Length: 272
Image (tube, rainbow, N blue to C red; front, side):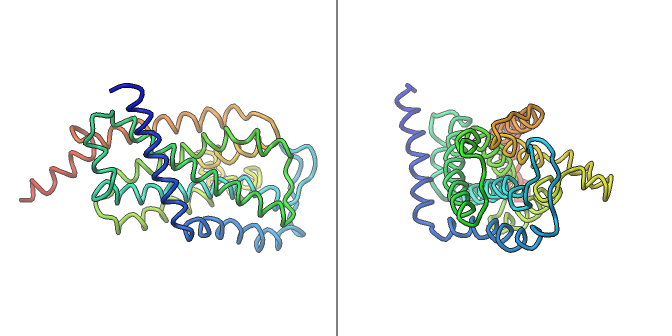
């Protein structure tokens, strides 16, 4: 296998995922509806009643809608990571991924390529949401839209790798929707996406500890600091470490000679 083979395979996987995204317009609009409901309806109701105190990375008081925007961006990426994994389950059983996994290309390369393609799709959704948010009054630092791009790529990789890991455990496509809800909503609500951690600590110490241990919290904070051209090294370390762990486990689980895929294949054989 030469570099050209790897480049062609990477370009083909990315192109196919982007074409699928462009053909599924309802997927694009569905990804925007959820965060826009929070931004336009819920944030509008809380804006007058709830102000956010001066906490890093903010240097002045901010409105509630500005505070929750990074959390809503992370929610878009989390949903996209789960949806990409849903299509991964289908492709693994009867689609293109079933064929690709039998090629001489390394399994880790195929999975990383598919993961990166999913991240590109999530970036389209994120910046479309930011455009709509700007017109409804959410103004972020101008340079933040550019500086936050690496943070958005890294958080997108983490959520995509998590979804890929979950997809490796699914035997039937119908079961994935329940697992999505079981993962997405607890991660979103038990984080700093909607309220600062110090408010959580005042209300419940147990909930505060859950939020502090939630990787979603660090993804939100990494994005939040990046928009204000600051680095949260703790969040960067946690998100980067989780990405590596989730991706490594996904590569192991998708290896047919060991991991979850082997046990799934042995299950029907043992039953027979």
